[in-house]
Amino acid sequence: MASSMRSLLSDHSRYVEAFRLFLENSTEHQCMLEFIEKKLPGIISSIGNGKSAINILSVGGGSGEIDLQILSKVQGKYPGVTISNEVIEPSGEQILSYKERVATTPNLENIKFTWHKETSSEYKSRMNEKKVFKKWDFIHMIQMLYYVKDIPATIKYFHGLLEAKAKLLIILVSGTSGWARLWKKYGPRLPLNDLCLYVSSADIKEQLTTIGLKYQVYELPSTMDITNCFIKGNKEGELLMDFLTETCDFSKTSSLDLKNEIMEELKKPECSEEKDGKVFFNNNLSAIVIEP
Ligand SMILES: C[S@@+](CC[C@H](N)C(=O)[O-])C[C@H]1O[C@@H](n2cnc3c(N)ncnc32)[C@H](O)[C@@H]1O
Image 1: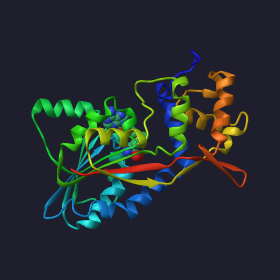
Image 2 (image 1 turned 60 degrees about the vertical axis):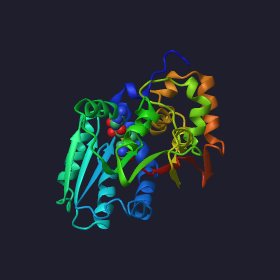
Image 3 (image 1 turned 45 degrees about the vertical axis):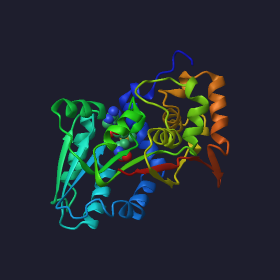
């Protein structure tokens, strides 16, 4: 790894800009929304049976965009039932956006929101200290396990908090995605950061089998248009390259060899598909549903 390369996460504003561009150029949220629309109602079909209140825990809820879609499906399935939605989220900025979103979204009257500004492991320690073992009807961890140090321990802990008919939903990049391919091949040559782990659904499935938990997997097809990455000096392309490699200013700080190799790799069918003169990176996600 060239010593000048540093993690994109070390430059928060560049990370936020790259992430926004990623959302604009990918079907990331669309494919999650389709899953929530078509599959989630079946998955949550028994979590609230016979209950007067439903308890939901969102781990790494971000700005709440996906959370509110999930909540609307729970409301649809259990009309009139009170919902308590608690959010574990370490970023104050994200919590602020979440609160603003809640304030401007109609029909949330029967939902009580609580935010905990902390990481999942801080939440676990705090609850263990207080000897609180609150149980939940639905827990979800969407695109956040990359930032957790001990993934098996985290899954085990939250799985232990499930009610008898509850479900734990994990969404992260698929083991068949271009991400998994890129990380496996080039992860060791990119700036390692103990804040972000290169994990895919393939790793999580392996860990779940080791822990002995039962699960079901849904594949969520998704793409990201990375055509601009191949246009020399294109600013958007450079930012997307930063996002793909999790490296700040990748095109200026990487060695020429590594840059050429990665650009070549990105065009391979294991990573992307070329269509109508555009290059679409495989951004497939997996949704893993775990039973109590
Ligand atoms: C990529 S975002 C996903 C947000 C949201 N779930 C979504 O899919 O739109 C990841 C979120 O996890 C949060 N996060 C990072 N480390 C965390 C941790 N250790 N525990 C809980 N949340 C964490 C980040 O602050 C961020 O809001």
